[in-house]
Amino acid sequence: MSEPGYEILSIDGLDRASRASGEPVLRPLGRRLGFRPFAVDCLTADGAGGHLIDRHDERGGAEELYVVVRGRALFTVEDREIDAPARTLVYAPPGTMRDAIATEKGTIVLAAGAERSTKPLKSSSAHIDELDAIELPDGFVWRPVRRHFGIRAFGVNAYTAREAGGPIVEEHTESRLGHEEIYLVLRGRALFTVDGNEHELVAGQLVFVRDPSLARGAIALDGETAVLALGGKPGEPHTVSAWEAMFAAVPAAQEERWDEAIAIHEEALVEQPEHPALLYNLACMEARAGRHLDALLRLKRAVALEPQWGEHAREDSDFAAIRHEPGFPA
Image (cartoon, helix red, strand yellow):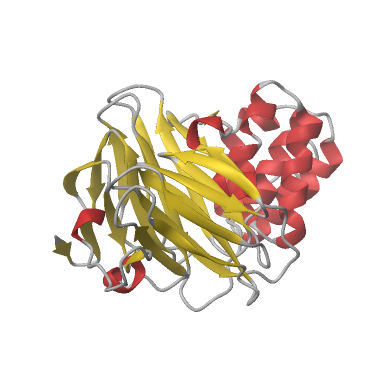
């Protein structure tokens, strides 16, 4: 189902590229959608024991993430075997030998990859439920996929819900970042609202939002619902979104571990030193930690870049200790 600016699709509806018996069956997802930021496809096998991924090492420089969408697969990465049931993620950096066979009939694996310009980490794997579960104030649970594996070449994260009926994807647009996004339901059911239109999606269905200006969000219809999100800006090397650092710092901030929360923000600022929201958030942490001069300097810079932050600061309780200091944005 295609609408202006977005599309709803089932993985089962993808074309099957013709292959010899026993070889991996390619289901070209990225080409079908017209998704431009990085390569993303689905792979299936003829049956249990069939090849899902031919043995190769991506010496061209691409890092790859494989997600078992359905069924079960046996991966071999760097001579290490990984039994991967549905919703397992397997990361393979450039130059790492890898292959996979289906151990259950009907297995489907999503493969995403792009060239990486920095030194990668080692190969690893994790089930989606083993990833950190960071509960956000808006009610949804962020599962940091990209951060967990150290992926740098493309954007990928996952979301679960606290309970049925709760939010699982926050309502937002990608107007600032210009990202195209794919949301794939890995488990359960989700009710997506895109550009004001509601769509109920079950496991194996996805929504591709090609227009960054469209508002999108989702609620979980089942308590166990899980959604995978992939995105990036077409034609540009991937830049890690600043909101990832802000989300990652939430547990430390909630427990008032200010040094840890500050360190997470400072690490992100190395790459984006003039990001207003990062500077503002860091100023909040520094003010709460008693680093008043640092907080004032960060806040003044955030306001200089985007004056709207001054309005937020005037009502923000995080700045109670410095609100009457000389230089505080009035």
